[in-house]
Length: 292
Image (cartoon, rainbow, N blue to C red; front, side, top):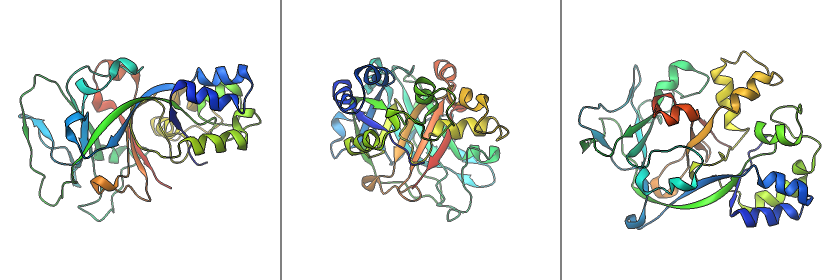
């Protein structure tokens, strides 16, 4: 199932929903929107909230992240929490400090080793580091064998986000008991409504918080399957329950300005449980990626 997620103002999304759903259903659908921060590459670093690529500034006592047996991870992005509109989000991000994202992108082995959520050994191939605002840091050179990505400053804007009707949250609201990850007989799954949502905004994009824009099936299901070691079927209620325990921390799309291409125009995703986020346990974030 191809992913579908939409960005925009609450009023714009409600107006779109009312074209295809009854007022009651439209209001219910709008009630499931989540605020997110859309990030866009910009030529002007002055008003940015972070950047893709370049070199990270790490605490002086912190080593560059490494996947043992494979090598150092590539630096993907830096996000300045103090410059994010965190008050607009429903996830509990720090109000200061920096989030750094690293990923083993295949530069060192020509893409032979893959970082997969379901492969516990490979999870060391993606990392999130949180650097508190008062930590002493120094810019780090890229380890031998890696080429840093070109710098692409990121600007931010607040938007409401909608997720797929086959996402567990939506399915439980509109068709409890329907097969997980599949369309069901309901107006929110009508081709007309889905096409309208797709035309409204079909890009994945870069994002902090909100609903993830999955390229394939909801990334929350992938994470839940991995956490449960693939031992439950899609019809098992435990899979849906586990998927509901994860929220999007960040997603980074393929980006021309930073010379980033994840598979076939895919995207990287980091998800985290709200309780771990509240306690700043970013090492417990889970990673997955999808492409077309």
